[in-house]
Length: 102
Image (spheres, rainbow, N blue to C red):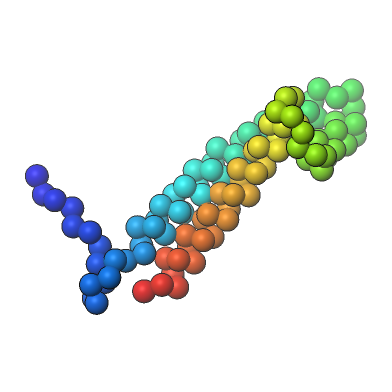
């Protein structure tokens, strides 16, 4: 069984490529799991309202409101949006680290 060698630069230092790859992978995973959660919860809020306008207003109020205690669909919507935002930041950080550092 072959041993996997660590990635080293020409001057003997470790390469930041594995860290960048892991950040991009983790950020993408958060976005992939967060987007369906946000869309599903927002659709549940909209479809449970008596009218489309009231449902859209309820969904926007849920996003704009305070986080509060962990109960209800509003909290789940906040968690999904936070997951997408953190995932996007991690993907961006991974791309910057992977491209700017040698």
